[in-house]
Each structure stands twice: as structure tokens, then as C-alpha cells.
Length: 318
Image 1: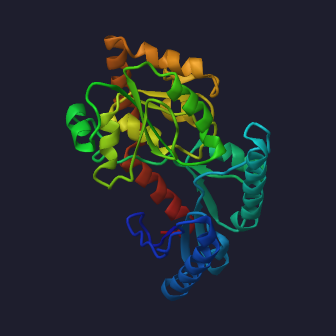
Image 2: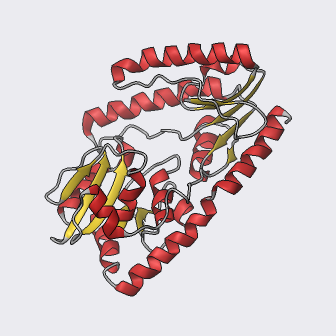
């Protein structure tokens, strides 16, 4: 959780540094971070840009801006059984609890039109959309063989990459079914929540220097999420110059544009496999890589910073 204060986005002190390493630690960490943030605001001024999931301190600020990274709102369903039903109900309750704090902020920024629609439909909130940026000096095309050697990955396989945490919206069961049906010369590299399969290798944790290389080591990125606030791995894959296969729902089409590798049904395993098969053709693969590199330019840091500075001027009068 970060709080940004001052006239420019470059002034971004992180004033809460305790992280929860298990669910049991979450309440204590939230309490410690809230106390630290309140103390900092009282000592250094009452301008607040809240970035994270603890928004209850907004009452301490005279001028306040919120970046809401995403909203979880899924009607509890039976697709993932009773545990999935309870998880959806819990997260929906958390979203409704947020509402009483979010209404206090002078302005709310969200990273996608998908989140803006959800904020207006579910919570009745008007928001400003500013897409997250991607650092194209960090995520950029590099030599694939060299990247694989540095990460200890085989050079003779077609590598399909996925980076995702736990969550029903991540659609991991579908990703697992894709992994089980990959051709023999394919390998799925999974970073984050595990997926089981005969041709799956889980990597990580990776250092800050190693993380961009996992995109350079991959031939293609596969995204199966049904709902996202944004989807950082999508822009990281684009900037790395590799093709992206993704559902068109949620932020898929918003980030990727009219990508020919979009899948209409996020649960259709055959559709993902057909998209992967088209990349066997050298000309198609090269065109998909060029498309990714060109699309990544939309998410440059410069325009992101300019948009935030305009918001800062409105909210803080800077």
C-alpha cells in the first residue's frame, strides 16, 4: 500500500511497509499500516493519494485521491463448488464495505474501462480511467535462447507462459485443461499459483532482474482470466514482443485491441489451442510479435504520468 503526496507523481513515498505473508496476518498488517499512514498524514500534511486496499484513512485528509486497482464482484456461483461460492460471497461483501470510504474521496482513478463500468454499475461511482503503464526499458525484446539459459529452461520446446495468482477470476481450471492438451513439444511455464499437468514447469520466485526474462524466454503468453482490474502481465508480454492469447472479455480486448488471437469464450479450451496452433506458421507468428510491440506503445510511462499530473492539479490544486 503506497500513499503519494505532493504536486507531482514523482513524489511517491511508500509510508506503509508491513506485508502479510498469510491470511492470518492480514488484520494485524492492516491495523499497523493504517496507523502508520495516519501518523504520516498528520505530520506531513493532509493531501492523500491512496493506492491499495486500505482506504479507511481517507477521513484524515482534506484533499484525497484514490487509485482503485480493481473491483471483485461476481455473483456467487456453483462452478467452483461450495468453497468458491463462499469466496465470491466474501469478496462481494468486502467490495460493498469499500463503498463507504470510496464515496469520501474527491476523485477516483481506475486502470480500465472494465473497472469503471463495474464501479458505476455496482457501486454507483463515477471514475476517471487511466491505464497502467509498462516500463518498456525493463520489458523489451531480448534474445530468447540467452533468456532461457539464464532461467534454466529448455531451448528445444515451445514455451507457453502464464503469470497469475489464486482467484476464481483467474480461471485456473481452464488453464490446467489447456496444459494437459498441449502438444508434446510444448511446455507451459507457470509463475504464481500452481497448475498441474504433464508439461508444466513452475518457476519462481524470481528476482526483479529475472522477472522480465521469463517473458523473453517464452514463445507466447496465454491469459485465461474472466475478470481483471487491469492485467499487468498482458502489457508486460506486449512490451516483450511476444504474442498474447487471451479471452476478449474483461480487459482482454481493451488492452490487446482487435488482436486476432482473442478467444470469445474464456472456458473454451479448443479455442485456446486453435489460437496457439495458428502461431506455428512463421509469417503469422512474426506478424503477431510485431503487433504486440506496436500495441505496447499505447501504455508508455509518459502519457500515464501526464494524465496523473492533470488529475493532481484538479484534486490538489497544484
